[in-house]
Length: 82
Length: 318
Image 1 (tube, helix red, strand yellow):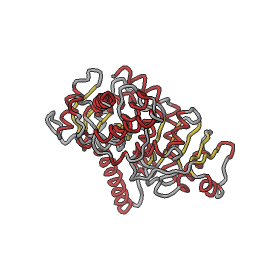
Image 2 (tube, rainbow over the protein chains, first blue to last red; image 1 turned 90 degrees about the vertical axis):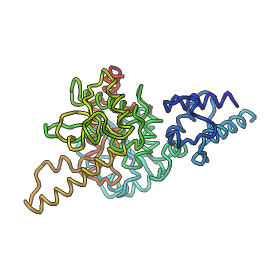
Image 3 (cartoon, rainbow over the protein chains, first blue to last red; image 1 turned 60 degrees about the vertical axis):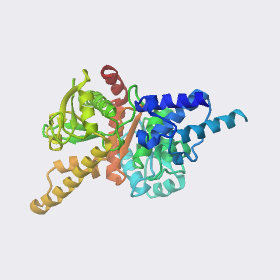
Image 4 (spheres, one colour; image 1 turned 30 degrees about the vertical axis):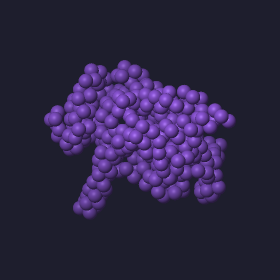
């Protein structure tokens, strides 16, 4: 999971022109000025990296970076495990 | 020339949209694809005569509402009219897409379906403002991005510069930053940072801050601001024009022709810049006259190859 989180952190930092260290698990996406387009861009980049399609359901309710990457990682694990 | 029209999302319903499209169809040699609920479109078409050989209907039943998160809705609603219509441009089945639905959804569709140009994060909407020199100054962004990072304003400057070079044949368009004063230190933190970043771009002809009253003097060809500010400026101008038109009509009993050139109810639409396809954003409150104007703008953008021209100029600026 750590590898997934670090990649997500790096991708989001690049998108938002931030230092990856500024993005903690508990950091609110709103506090990073990340909007829904930023979130979808991150998801699409992770989809490319892991060759998977993430669902959109419930995304609006994931308010922190940690909540977002955890939900995405759980889906990735489900896909891997069939 | 084929234009895909998203008939959904306008304040006045699909009848007004289709009415404007059919007028353009009669007066041009192009063809159109109407994208939306086919039964609703058929009911409107039944009231008109038109050249059926140049009109196609593609069924799309989903609509992205104004309150929805645009980017997520674009992924979730694959059969939304704006998604289907934009997809036709991507697939080469249409040369341009036009919509008066949710601007956020149209921007997200353009970004994720058409794709962005190299070096561009978010596509802005360009508004053409008539000026005292008899030309147009370009105000960017007039509403696609309400929150902008300072670096994005630099990209808007580069896009505006590329667009002005392409459309107006200006070698080095002057770029100004809309601010509340001319001095370098004016403005909020984002404006001050944008000023610093713009000044550091050697290939941009940045002339400094521009105040609201200077929008119409023609001293610069490109004026950048965030979409929140730009949209308020645009709509304040539209309201002022309507007010002055009413007062002028009351006093003189007629309107000088300049009012037609600045009346948003007739001008119609504006292109999204920085994306790999022509996407024309129309007012949500567009009536058929505005849609007709938007169709003409879409055709002009295709004919003048704004996408290729922007890409070429952008490569030299970024």
